[in-house]
Length: 95
Image 1 (cartoon, rainbow, N blue to C red):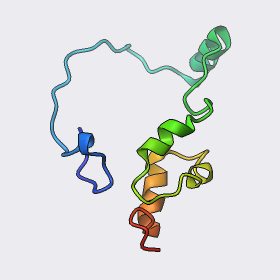
Image 2 (cartoon, rainbow, N blue to C red):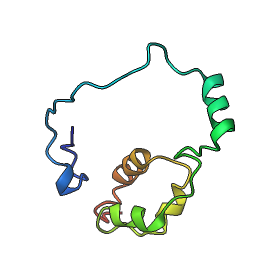
Image 3 (cartoon, one colour):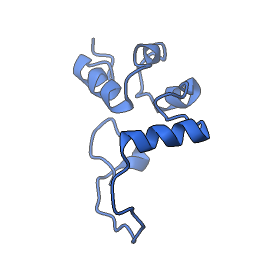
Image 4 (cartoon, rainbow, N blue to C red):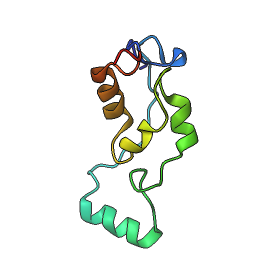
């Protein structure tokens, strides 16, 4: 658990082993059809379908990254966005 990535927040470092206590799991995986029926019956909205909370995302940005870049990643994942920022050198403002 955690990360040794230099972009990780202080409370996410260092990477370390954790023990997970027992938990219940179904005997079979949930099929797409079962999940579709669940969504239709409950109105559940997945995290991918929820509008982003820009204030929360801004608080997680590495220093020096302009908040307007968040809109560029609206339909992406946090990990993909960090990977792009790191590739572009934007986490340090070097480009």
